[in-house]
Length: 316
Image 1: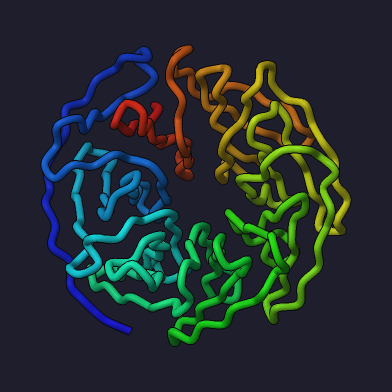
Image 2 (image 1 turned 180 degrees about the vertical axis):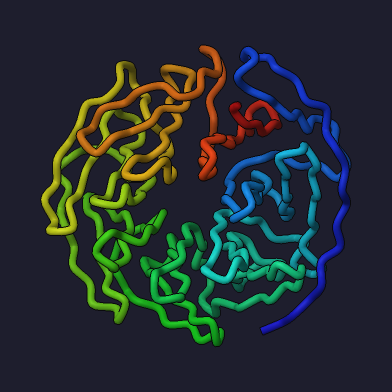
């Protein structure tokens, strides 16, 4: 376990309105240091933290347009951040998919005061991906390359759970039942806080990518299809055909109470998903614009990232 203090650069990027007056877009093309917004997580004050696609930086964006880019300290500056989440104390946690030494993987934590702590996963080629905060205060993560899920406690103690050969877990989410849920190969895996596991077969062809809780059920995207899958805490699985075209909803993120926000490759919009499987557009981005992730503040502002455009934004 190694600890560091951040070094940061703050500036105000230029704001534009290419998708109409409802959206404000901040383009970071040519920014120094370079930053391509990807994942994001909401803070209590309505600001957001962002990760850089394929990069080793985090950024804090305020509602006034101020952006602070944070570089991971050396030697971790050669790593790549994959996913981010916040715990109940406001600490930011993230997975690193490539370690600086080429063998170990790390879970990173940054406190609100800007102090970094790195926890090594001493398993070669673990290929850390998803990360989520559990209701009991632990942080859970997935090891795509090692067919495992892991739990790290506030003390720093790490426990790993083998999901079975070829599981390839990607994202992970805390469910409404208090369990953790992760995507597997042709299944989802329900994991209790103590590590008891149950596989639930999902009879739908495709690559299961993203899983999120709506507050009453789990919803999952199926890459390369126009389907969404609802999994009740009891294990009941139901498929919904929700959009037209080869690709539909690619990511799901928490939305207003009882709903989720989905980024739609076909509609060029951010959609709100209700628990009956119905979608409605809440932010229109245009036919060629595809958002990566989206989150909503208690006041109703929706933040989103557009990595293809090297931008992030909000509406209104």
